[in-house]
Length: 58
Image (cartoon, rainbow, N blue to C red; front, side):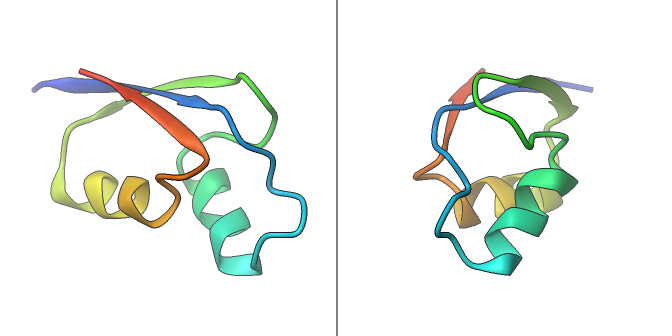
């Protein structure tokens, strides 16, 4: 299965609780933390929700 490397670039401070929960679901909760996940529609949807706080690498 293909994987996606996600790096958190934005702070969850002053964000809504669902965006914070989405970051935790992606395995991110601190700045510059990196998570490698499988490329699935569920993960893509979570990334889309917090796209302003993460950087995605193929």
